[in-house]
Image 1 (cartoon, one colour):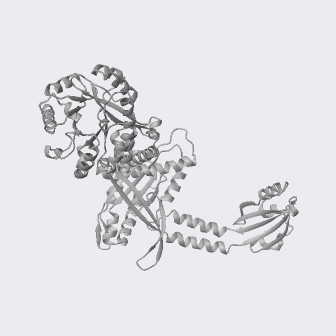
Image 2: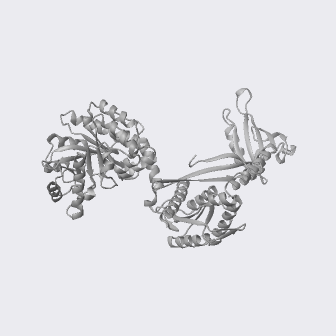
Image 3: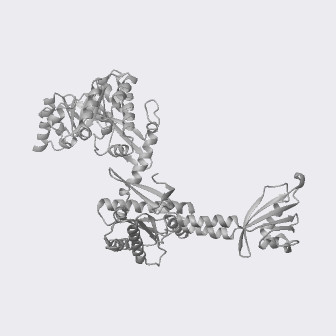
Length: 626
C-alpha cells in the first residue's frame, strides 16, 4: 500500500457512495518511521468519465466503400461523411492525399491487415479503420473504410485529463498536473536550472479530527491562496497541491531567490487562520531542491521525467530534514537523504541475504558484503587468543558503509536476524578452516539486540557448529549492554541456553552503558571487552581509574577483561602495568581478510610479525566496529 495509489468506494455521512483515491507515504527519521495518508475525491473524474461513456455510445459512424483506384463507390451511415453526394468522389478529396496514398500503397501487394489512423476533417476528429477487399483471397480490389466521429470523445478525454491534473479542493494542479507541466519545462529549456520549493502543513489530520474536514479543507484553500499570492508569475512558476497538506512550487530561480521566497512563504502560511469561529495557527516545514542539468544535455523526455520525480523527492527529503532539525526552511543536502539511502540499503541487503551459497551470501561471492577478522592477543607474549569477525560492505551505489549503519538499516527493515545468521554462518565456515589446520582459536561474533532475544538463536548456533564440525568452544558471541537491557530476562535465558553448548559469552563495549555488578552477575558472562574510548585516556587519572575499576569488576565476576583500541606501545605498557592480560587493536593487528588471518594464526605471531603480515596501510580506523 505504501507508495501506491488505490481507488476505492467510501461511504459519506449522508449515505452517498463516493469514489476516492487513497495514498500512503512513508518517511524515515533516524529510528522513527512516519506514515502519512491522503484521500482524494474522485467524483469530478467519475462525472467526466460517465460523459465520455455516453459520448462513445452516441458517436457518429460513417462507412465508405472505395475501389482500387481510390474512388468512393458507396456510402452508409449518418453524419457529415455519410451523404450520397460523396459517391464518385476521389478518396483523396475526402480523407486527404496522405491517407489515400497510404491505402493505395498497401493495396498494391497481397492482402494486408486493416489500416488504422486518426484524422481531422472540417473541424471534426475521426478515427478510421480501412479493411482490404480481396475476393477469394486474391489481390486487393478495394477498401471498406469505417469512420467514427471522436470529436466529443477527444473533448471528454481532455476534460478527464484536466480533472486528473487538477486538485478539486483548491483548484491548483495535482501532483500529476505538476509533473506534466514541469516535464515540459525541463524538455523545453534543458540548460536552465529548475528549483522546487515544497511546503508541508503539519497537524492537518489533528485539525480534521478535532474540528471536522470542512475546517481542514478551508485551511487548505486559504493556504493555497496565500502561496499563490506570493508567486511573481514572470518566470514559468508552477504551483500544485501534491499531497494532503503539501504544496510544491517549481520554477526558474537562483538559490538566493528561492531561499528568500521560501522564507516569505513560511512566514505567511504560519499566520493565524480564522475558520468558522476557530482560530488555527498552522505549523509548517519548507524544503527546497534544485535540478541542474549537465552542460550539453538535450531535451530527452525520459530524462525529463526522471528529473521531475527526483526533484520532488529531494524537496520532500529536505522538508523532513527541516522538521527533524526544527528549522523553518532547509535546502536539500545529500547528508539528509536518509530515506533514499535506507531504502537502497534495505533493498540491496534483502537481495544479498536471499540465498545462501555454501555458507556464503550472494554478495559475499562478488566481494561487496564480506567479513574481515581482527585478532585478540595476550598482552604478555603477543600470542593470538581469539579472532573477531567484522562485517564489511562496499555498496555499488553508496560506497563503503559503516557496519553500524548496515546493522541499523537491517533492524529497521526486519533483516537483522537474517543478517546475523549469515555472519555467523560465514564466520564459523571460516573458523573451520583454521581449526582444521590445528589452530584451535575461537572466533568472536557480534549479536544484534534482536538476535539476543530470539529463542531460535539457540538451535541456529548449534546447527551451524555441527555443520562445520566445530565444538562449542570454537565460538564466542559478543553482546552489548544496550542489546541486553532491551529485554534482560529473555536475553539471559537465551544466552544461558547458548552457553550450555560450550559457547562463551562476552559483554562488548563495556563502559558505554549503565551496567552494575548486580546486573552483570545476573548474566551468563565469560568475558568483558572494555570500550576503546577508555584506552585513549589511559595516561589520565580518569582513564586509568576506569581501567582499574573494570579490571576489578572482571575479577569479581571471575572472567577475563579484553581492552579494545590499543594502538601504541605506550598504551600497551600502561595496560600491562595495571594487570590487563588481553588486548585488541592496531598495535597488534588490523582487520584483514581470511587469507591474512590464516598466515597470522600459522605463527600466532608476535606483535611485530602480526602487523607486518597484515600489510594494511593508511590512517588508523576503529578496530572494534561490529
